Image 1 (cartoon, rainbow, N blue to C red):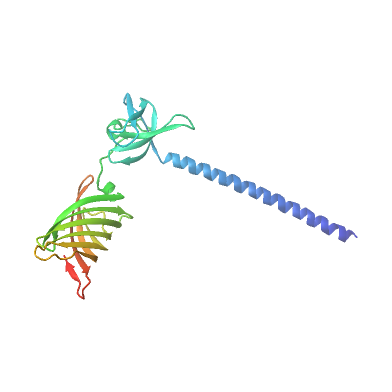
Image 2 (image 1 turned 135 degrees about the horizontal axis):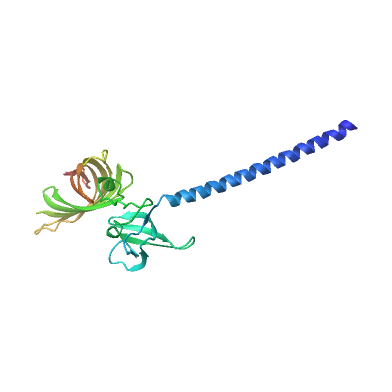
Length: 263
């Protein structure tokens, strides 16, 4: 009888100890998770550079431009956090209390005399090639020759990585015998983006509409698919400007048995 009564008691005691250990482990895990979240929040706040206003005041606008209205003024000695930059404008945040804050845009000319945590003036550098390499968007205009016709191209590109971008272009070519309107989308690869004169390569496709200038006999317009490959070079000049030179080879897929090649 002693063996029969002792075994359940030992099992019950072991079960209680296991439940206590699991509960303690759960509490420790919850506390650790809470501390991790708090640390991440503190770290996120510390990612913003904090500066003190040294001028009598600075104006905060609703957008990055002098055309946007001033909605808040920060006085001398107050602290602001710099969130991000857009050309010569900086987005800043002024914490009023733990739950309220003001966010807006300040021109760099009003930030050159701000102070850091050590009391030194904060240096705001001009845009350079590193800023240009880290861009997300670019746009430009090109002029040149399209199979003997004068052409002008407007394009816009999205920088997916430092090496790969997606470009959309619209080209108008005006010739003696026909006019063409070409729309393309292409992938551009820039293997050495840190070079001041950086080569790039293109591959893409699109559509071309050709309108003949026949006077005696009215020729019908053509609407064909286009494949293209190309190469070029981007020469960084200063700040947000660069010179782009490129060569493209187009294959126009006509309705006939022979395709046309245009350079």
